[in-house]
Length: 140
Image (cartoon, rainbow, N blue to C red; front, side, top):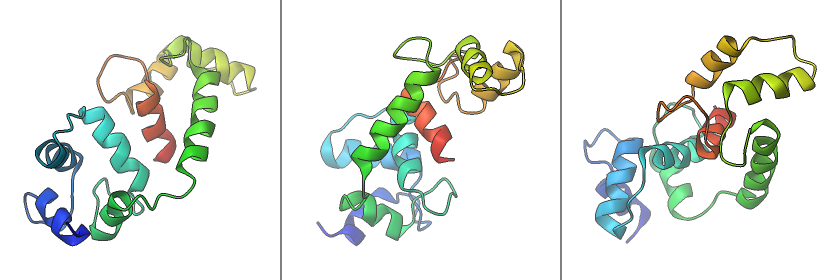
């Protein structure tokens, strides 16, 4: 299937853009791939060149053809950065964010300020940042 045909199949509302929800549904219907909203948002953010939160034809084509250059290098760098902030290997908490920012010489922030920073990118509302949420934040 050519990229424009695939794009049309994913663009369910016909607005010329693919949302995270449409991406998720499209992957399920075409590949049987079940993806979380969080993962769909992270994938979308990784190729959303114009930052509108949606994929146009060109952005979708780069995703569909695997044209993302240096993806492995970017992921490795993001994993290393995530590890600096994470309280464990799986999440960034308000306390771990505060501790790391303090070590990096940032002005002293309270836990509530760090909680507010996390809240902006906490896609699943659990109060912490997973790697995928951190990746979305770093790509914003």
